[in-house]
Length: 284
Image 1 (cartoon, rainbow, N blue to C red):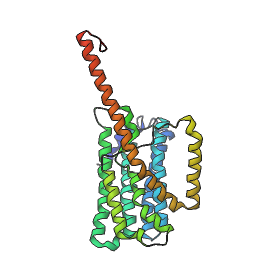
Image 2 (image 1 turned 180 degrees about the horizontal axis):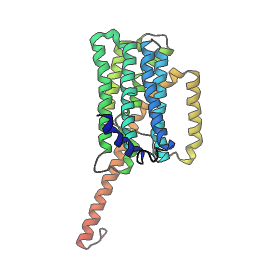
Image 3 (image 1 turned 90 degrees about the vertical axis):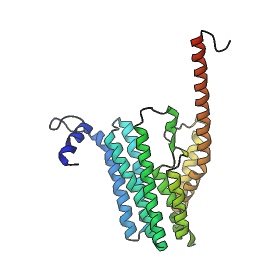
Image 4 (image 1 turned 90 degrees about the horizontal axis):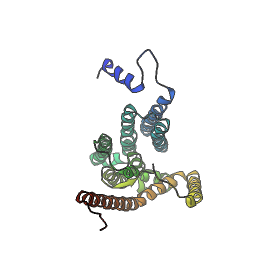
């Protein structure tokens, strides 16, 4: 696409006619955060090429933090846009699909030869398929029920990237060589890639509310987690990944329970409508 055809689109996206007024700073903040995540993902590849695997993992974690912020900031400021959503998807593909795959290939899978490269290719491809499915779901003509906003379909790309990096992060702390073995790393990557494109409902943690009586225990738990991350960051990150995996059965059960409630409510509405049409009460 030429620059001449892109300029009107950009003008419509950021508001106003060219030459009259430019976009507000608030409208640019989420996109700046997305670009910061993209830079972190690219920097992770640079560190991996230099053999600095710890710095590469840290760069991917920083990208995940920026990725978590950009969407929330856009919604808080009321400046969410289609341009921002597309930019975010492209950034996610590189930061959480390409970057972790290349980091793990250079750290371990290159020793497995052609098979290691095949596994490396599969991870970003599954990430791209997941992001494409997510984007097409946003454009659906029939919006899903409001409660589905509490769940993702499959493991989201940032969580998938961090889960795939767990064997590498474990190898930074323990002296054994098995976590970085190509077989272990490849098996974990295949499983995580499968979970990303699966239909497993996973908690999104976007709309959850904490009961009042659990606020203080939640703060204490958060303090404990931060203490573990501060004292043993690599072990702490690995444990967080295992905790996330342990929540998957609970998210599946909660999703099924909510679907049953929706189905029962829908059947109740049908019975009520039929009774109204026939002129009788549903409770007679």
